[in-house]
Image 1 (cartoon, rainbow, N blue to C red):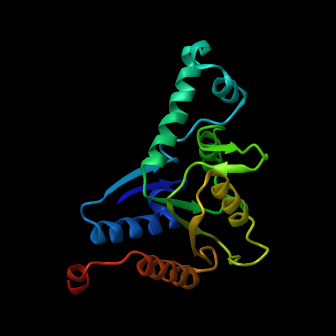
Image 2 (cartoon, rainbow, N blue to C red; image 1 turned 90 degrees about the horizontal axis):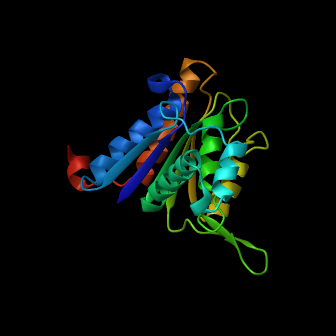
Length: 208
């Protein structure tokens, strides 16, 4: 299996969402030693802000693009190819001010390309073209909002992923990260247990 892991936290090794991603990566390598894992860290290698120049490049015919526009489109093409090549996609997301990190929003904007990752049918219905992916979204949240109206991030992600064609999505949240050491430890432990339940281990690893 080919796994793409997208890291988004600005905190590096101190990140709780990174802890979850590292745990999943370790479990994945144990379960599938022959599989490949690609890691994209949007904090150390951020996608440029999605601005007017970006839109202009993407909507300019290929033969008329300037060198700068060609670079913009090449980045979008590379991100999309990386996503399409994966069987499993893992997004590790902290919650910043009730929503996703800005760098992840830009990443999604570079992925959303009409005729490439989505299209509209003759009836005007959007159809996602990024299909057949298992998506695991690992969330680290300071408070507790999973499954409540206070979760303002997950509904958007569900809609956006579906718009691109990714409908097999599992959310695993480590909550209470800012509610004291005990609550944070419990939140991380529960999230790691849910990861373990999803990533089946070979008998040799279980017996070790």
